[in-house]
Image 1 (cartoon, helix red, strand yellow):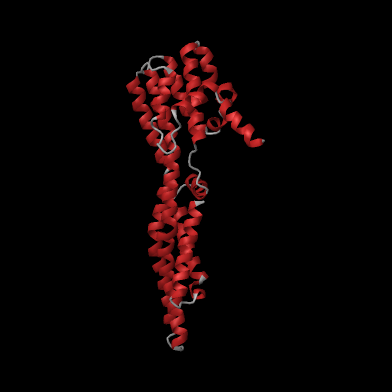
Image 2 (cartoon, rainbow, N blue to C red):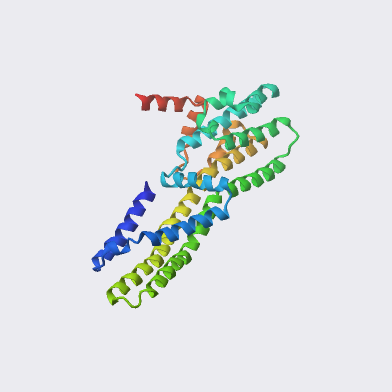
Amino acid sequence: MSFLIGIIIAVGCMLGGFAAMGGHIQVIWQPWEFVIIGGAALGTFIIANKMKTIKDTGYAIGEAVMDKSLKQRDYLDVLGVLYTLMREMRGKARNEVEEHIDNPDESAIFQNFPRVLVNKNLTNFICDYCRLIIIGNARAHEIEALMDEEIETILHDTLKPYDALTIVAESLPALGIVAAVLGVIKAMGALDQSPELLGHLIGSALVGTFAGIFLSYGILSPLATKIKTVRENKSRLYIIVKQTLLAFMNGAMPQIALEHGRKTISSSDRPSIDIVENETVAGGAGKADDNTKQAA
């Protein structure tokens, strides 16, 4: 929502200021200039990226526009599933725990936290390292190094849409110049026409420069930054898992290990110790109660 509000303010002030100076807004509407710029930008974007990145960029734009950042409920569910798994690993036999991590889709633990289960990458991340823990041969510092490497890879992959859009945004001013040059070439062919018509053609050509700069710095660059913010925010879940499981490996009780993970959450979104304790002891019951209240 904030992205849409920002776009409305930016476009509104730009057009409003132009009109207040005595400009005619209809002059800015040069559809073929926008076709040249937009088509060239889209073409170079497709050339530079794999189809997977192109599809993910569309999804990332939707996340940014809708501001799909993590909510407190997302953090609580991750802490809840970690707490339950750590209690299982601490108090039950290896084969009983493996039933949950080998097939999380059918695990009662993961089914109680659907926000975690729907995130397949995060679920696999949790299960993989819980599996290493119950094997018993891995050392904490080795697991930490492996986690850091995987998290870096995950973050690199999730930020590919940001990198792709940033490159397109940087190219848009130059593509705007291309559109303007083409417009000037058209105007040069009308030098024998009236000054009024020639002025109109030159003005139309300059719209290409304006459009390229505005689309770059006024729309695409802020959109790319918003994508980066949302994707980095979602990646914090992996840091929570990392810190919690490492603390557990180093001998911390499950509830103490959760505190290691809770402290990695931004202070603006971090749930209190009491909330985490109530949620983890309830094993997801708190979420069920919230859903019941919303339904009512």
